[in-house]
Length: 264
Image (tube, rainbow, N blue to C red; front, side, top):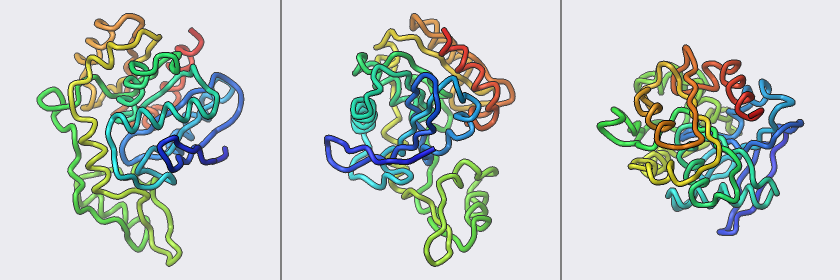
C-alpha cells in the first residue's frame, strides 16, 4: 500500500491510497466520514483479483477541507483521478455517499466507467423513502485525550460502534486524538447527497452490481429491487448479517460478490 497526491484541474490535490497488486483496477469511493484506507480489508480479500485505488475525497482524510461539496465537485474529482492515473475506463465502486458519486460519474462520463459496484445506497436519498438520510453531527467534539474518549463522545450521541469513524482519527503532536474531518463539512457533504437521483442511476448502461446489507436502513430491499428492475445490466446481491458498512461487516462475502462481478 502506498499513498500519493493527485493534482486536480480545479486546484489542490487529492490524497490517494493505492493498495497495489495485480488484478482489475477498481476506483473505490468511500462514504461520508471515511477515507481511502477503509478499503484495506476489502483490498486484502480481493488480492490478485482487483487493485483498489481509493482517494480521500474532498473534506476527508489527507485531502483536507474545501469550500464546496456539491455532487458536481465529487464527480469532477473522481473523473480527474481516473484520467490522471490513466485508469479509464475503470470499474468504480462507491459506498454510501461515494456510491452516489459513482453512478453520477457513470451517467455524466460514461467513457470513464466500465462497470459500477454500488454499496448500500440507492437512487433516492430523502424522506420518506429513507427514514434518516442525514446524521446531524453539528457541534460534535473533534478531539479527545485518548481514542477511547473519542469513541465515547460518539457513543454518547447514539453511535454504538465508532470503529468506522475511528479509521479517520489520528494522534496530534501533543498526544490528543482528533478526526480528519470537520463536522460542519460533513453536514454539507451529507446534505449534497440528499435528493432524487433516479435519472443518474438510469443514465448509464455499463454493467452494475448493487450490494445491500441485510440489516441496512439506508437501502431498503424494495428500493434495491427497483434499481435492478428499472436499469438494464444491473443485478443485486444482499449480503447476509451486514448493515450499512457492508465491506466491514462481511468482508469475505462482499469480496466474493465483487469478484464474481469482475469475472463476468
